[in-house]
Image (tube, rainbow, N blue to C red; front, side):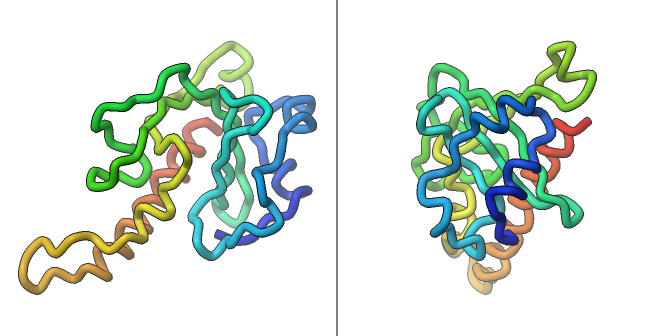
Length: 161
């Protein structure tokens, strides 16, 4: 992911009011984030634990959405819809985002199941197990990284309408 500064990050949100953007709390350690190791920036607001944020680059534009965390975590073996990880034991959480524009103003939302702590970028970088003799684990990992990027961009694009 390309680096972000605070100004670009705050300007990126497509489904937020000015007040929501001004009240936004930056992710802990924002200045030390290694953007080369992540495919999107996702975090839960430390002061409002039911609120979360995701920012991703789409067509060279930083695009962010505010998410609402469902009250209960999905503890069962649910699958994250972004990283498609089924081998790691991560909590998966239901998040909903108000749609941007007129649809959002009338209450339309879109939801998705995502790793509760937004660890997808780390998950897809783990080498998958050897599936069969000759299986290219490096290529499989690269394809998982690309799929994660596509899934996040598609979700944010759906919020944009």
